[in-house]
Length: 194
Figure 1 (tube, rainbow, N blue to C red):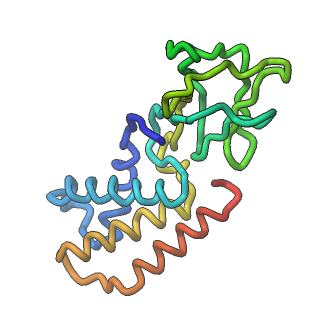
Figure 2 (cartoon, rainbow, N blue to C red):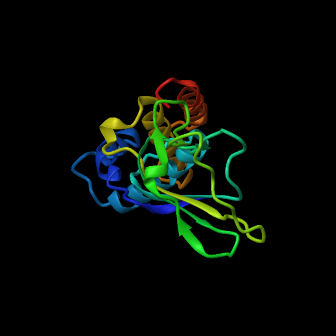
């Protein structure tokens, strides 16, 4: 399960584009709060659909066990920029930290992974009576709107336009917004940069 605190500063970068998308003049700022909320809602949906973290922050992923055999720990979101810690509950149910010297982070794959530093390093024994016994704490997300893949940005803005239109703020001709959103999400899912 992914959880964490995020910084929606990218919302400010997308606000001008969102105003244009919903046909609100740049000088009209009375709708900025609501547009910001729509950007956040749309960004969260795009994150869910693409596994691309748009708003940078610190996150936790919980696992019920270590990977089997020589398999790495996979982190099913991107871009991951740093691993802060790996904690686990040992067979005495005490929380421990897996030493950073015992693993290495590999961000050059479709999904970022954490390998044991050496094959003779074993994953420690875990408590058998708990769920989420292993927690990976990491930094992830876009550092600025300019680093968000184009397809993801298009998906966010088309979703904002659809939400804006559905709330009765005007008729933007919503027929195409759902198709644009789905097309952009599908492109983001299948592209090499995600």
